[in-house]
Amino acid sequence: MMMLHRICLIAFIGLAAGKQAEDSEFALDSALKESIHLRGGPDRVLVDGLGDPGALSTSYSETSYKNVFQKEADSFSDLLVGLILICLTPCLLAWNEKRHVYALKRLMHVSAETKDANSDNPSAADNRELVHLTGVITTDNAVLSDSVFPAIQSKGAFGIRRATEIYQYTIKKETKKEKTTFGGEEKKTTTRIVEKWCAQPVGDLKDSHFKQKNNNGNWDKLAPPNSSKWAESGRMGKIEISQSFLREQLADFKPIADGPAKISVDGVTFTKRGSEGYVDYSGASPPIGACRIKFTQASGNVKCSVIGEQCDASGTKQGPTGETLQYGIKAHTIIGCGICIPNSNLGEVLICYPGTFSTPELVKMEQNSEFVMVCVVRLVGYVLLMVGWGCIFSPITNLLGAIPFFGAFANFGIGLVAMIVGCTCASTIISIAYLVVHPLLTTCMLGIIAGIVYGLHYLALKDGGAAAAHQYSH
Image (cartoon, rainbow, N blue to C red; front, side, top):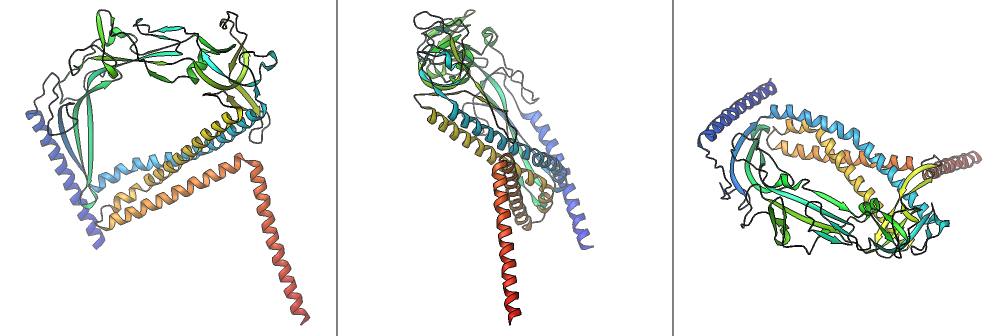
């Protein structure tokens, strides 16, 4: 009866707190509608000391409350999230172990099958074979120009890129949560307008408290506002380098250092302004709707080391003396023994690093990258499983949080249990997946374990027999 009385008391207090929260929100909303005066133009004066200096136009705050029973209802959505994470994370970890094994097998084939070739004198005997090439990849100083601003040019680059931003009003929300008595929660949300550069127009603000309007300025005159242009092809000596190779392997973009002081389109002039790029306004601060453009390039004439399959060229690229190039380079498909399945497709190999490296050095760098990749995915798996179990236990933590003093210690203990269970699950799944994708190693380990067990059993029987014989003799 005493416990039932306490539960009823907590429920009554919780409902009263919820009603008070609703009344407070209604009063706050009414006061806001009556007292907040919003200006139509940009205003960079801070209000209530919030936000970044020079960026805030106006803001308002809302406070809401949840009692322990309302939080308990919300925790069931966390429970669903936890179940999804616990079900899907093992699939991620198993896929990662399989991918890791296939990657290592590919690199083993690369080490065994790659031939050193001469890019200045390719051989027909190396066609459709894995080859290692070292040389300068160049486009023979071909000129690339932007499609909207032809004055922006880059000589010898692999690619040129234009990225446009527009200055807009945006809404930013900041939420702070604090625990209240009997496991409740107070949440204060501050909503403010921030002026900032955006990748595309935002449109009208979807908040009835604000009346500021965005405009697109000169954005529509820059169709398309963002674009990339690549060289048709390049070459390494007498080996043709395709455009897809340039896009996938040599997309290292950096700002274009030189360029005209002004560029224009449809009567709109953009002025170069240091690291900001080209802007269409003249003042110190951008107005709403202002645009700025940054041009970058993937510089050419890069000395690289490449491992790939020598193949027939497209027949359109000319060499240094005007001859048509006959051979190119592309990704090579590795066929080998997969996981207990011979003649499996282990994936494609196309390795390219700036600099001069031998085949063993390139393989070593790829192995290091693969090791980092598999460890990162494993770490993500650990985190996802710990979060998943934490979500599973969330209904319990919410209930225990209603108990003063004891709730904090209980929640810490449950969090520790979730971490231990998550780590145990992740370690078990990774171990099982590792053994499944390494069948030979698994067989050897099981054989060794069986041998040890049999040996211990044999020694135990032998010692028991000797003891019995000794006792019988006496």
